[in-house]
Image (cartoon, rainbow, N blue to C red; front, side, top):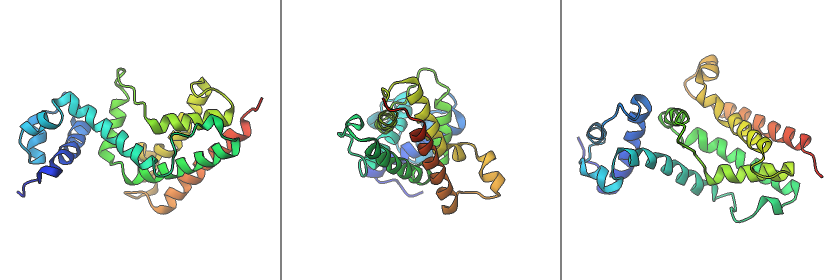
Length: 208
């Protein structure tokens, strides 16, 4: 078997760990089997991550980092949505959501989705990402409510679910469609539905 180059070993460990943790759970996976599958020395786990728990957390950190770097190409995080006009916040929100449809359907593996679903069941885990927080602020700005208002949080959550539900519920999407993956036509429908939901929020928002 061809050896993994040192500069690629960290990413190879992460990719392998995602697959094992997703399908076998945290307690069902050993560091040794991850290293064997990734074809790296056992000491590389300690060198890069420290241990199994740190490796698991590194998977989430890696996703958040990739998502944030991707978001920086179209979001200016330094701009406060509460200083924007309603139209400005709406335009940026639509740009954000459209781009995140592309991100979720092209840069997040099925194994990682399964791992994220299992992580949601851990009551000690709170996934607090810069991108979700920024979208929450945009929604709050549009609704003229604080970003941590209960309705703002749920509206943002429902909006995000418009993006990810077809992938996390394949029995209600891909299998009904009789296909193994999403086509560009499907992506367009998802984007259109997200825009419709944004329009409903705008229509229902009350401006003091």
